[in-house]
Image (cartoon, rainbow, N blue to C red; front, side, top):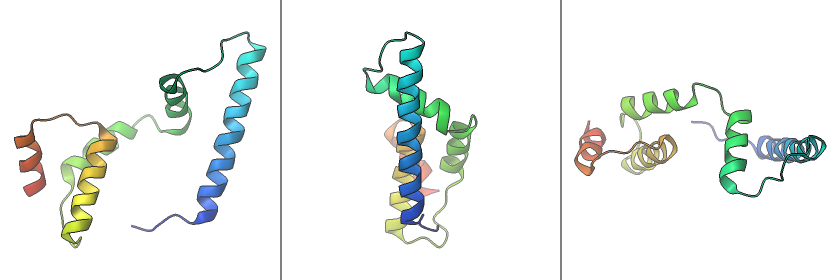
Length: 101
C-alpha cells in the first residue's frame, strides 16, 4: 500500500479546517447552536467526508483479509486497524478464527 504524501495530508487538513470554519459560520447564520460535542462533530465529518458505502467496504475488507505477502507484523497491524475502523464486535473466538484464516 502506498503512503500518502505530506502534501496530501497538508491540503486535506487545510480543506477540513476551511470546511469546519464554514460550518460554524453557516450554523451561526441559521441560528443553530454551536457544535459542543465530539460526537456531533464526528457525525458531521462522517456525513461530509466518508462515502455512503464506507462501512460496507470496511466489512468486506475485514472479511476478505488474508496474509498473502504481508509479514506477520504487517498482517496483524492491518487486521487490528480494520477491526477498529469497522467497529466489528465479535467474540474473541470469532476474531481468532478470522485471524487464522
